[in-house]
Length: 168
Image 1 (tube, rainbow, N blue to C red):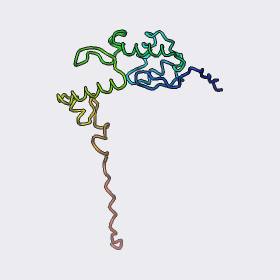
Image 2: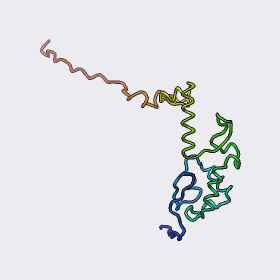
Image 3: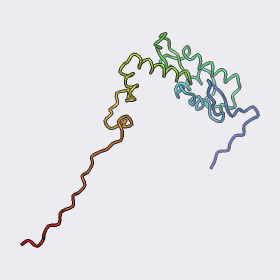
């Protein structure tokens, strides 16, 4: 039996933009926040608690002031949440702790990899050669870096020569 679908009101928004990401207005607030790159379940839960909004409320039904409140909490997460909840702790350049989302997070990750490659650290060298970086074994996995598996080639059976059966 299907659930009766709620009819959206006049002020319902089907697409809501938060932190440069388009989110589905039909989903709950906590589920929609997880669609933003850099926001996990735990962080989305903390954002809902800090903004004092109902987690199960549909995103499309929220007012513009509520959406701005959520965006402000995400932007100022480094001052509201404990350090272990942030995704960029002790930044290399200025030793600050921030929480990055969407394109800022992608840009920071690319810069980190470029810096490791530039100083030729072990991880940087592994990134350059497209090898696994975090200590995985490569004998059976990561075959894209080594080529196709050939295996053991079986030798073809040599047909027997017909012998003279007339020998006695």
